[in-house]
Image (cartoon, rainbow, N blue to C red):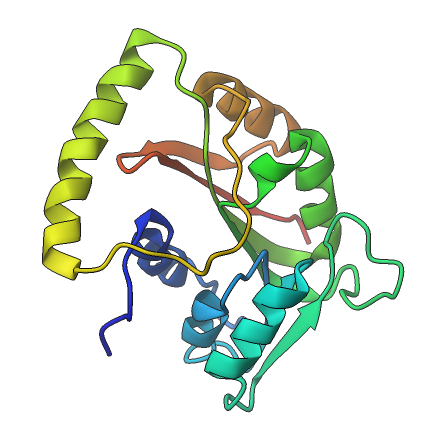
Length: 202
């Protein structure tokens, strides 16, 4: 079914869906916003949780996707969860799209890793800051591609949840990811995003 809106995050949700590990039973999407990604994960995973620290986002997600029997939306912060709404070590897949640049990178990655079950997979679609000539060249190419895609998909919008600009440059993010998550896969994407994939040892 076509989406009601398109943006860079929605564009890369399809990439996230292709990375759902075989045999995945429980998935968690942190910073779920209006719940679109959890609703799409629900077609592939028996139990899906969408978490967001903003009450407005969770209310919107429940309005739009609360009819799905295998999706639960919780108001919770993955960095600080005193109520235990997000049990550590229980999820076969943890996803974070345009989320972790809102926090210290190390703190965010370590929190996401704690949520993963042994053998689970972390999939991050994140943002970096342009600093080098190569960064700006990729940005210009991405802007051209974005205009074409927007014409194809229509309205470019989002859920109206808070956003902020990244502070870590792309190269620094990649180096930090490889240092914190040995064996991870990290690559720059065209539409001002990067992809980080890591499988937790069993």
